[in-house]
Length: 86
Image 1 (cartoon, helix red, strand yellow):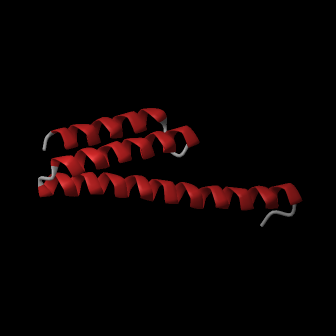
Image 2 (spheres, helix red, strand yellow; image 1 turned 60 degrees about the vertical axis):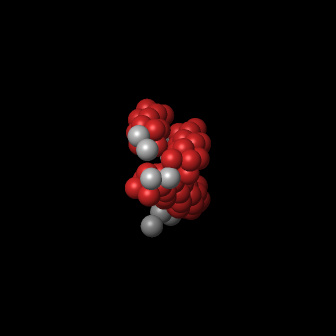
Image 3 (cartoon, one colour; image 1 turned 30 degrees about the vertical axis):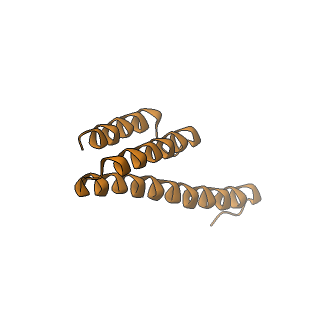
């Protein structure tokens, strides 16, 4: 454990950020799974709506630095292609 006060504070803020990023990543994965479930069920309208929601979440995660912007773009295109195939 750190002895320096600033490092103790940094450890606390890092842990808070880690927990927040984990929640954001889980939310992103859940949105992607919802698109996959709608496609499997053959529900095109729901799949498109969930794809739009997933795209928004991916953009939000990229802007916050949770994931890289190119990874967000790749996942958005994959989700859109999946939703379009219904």
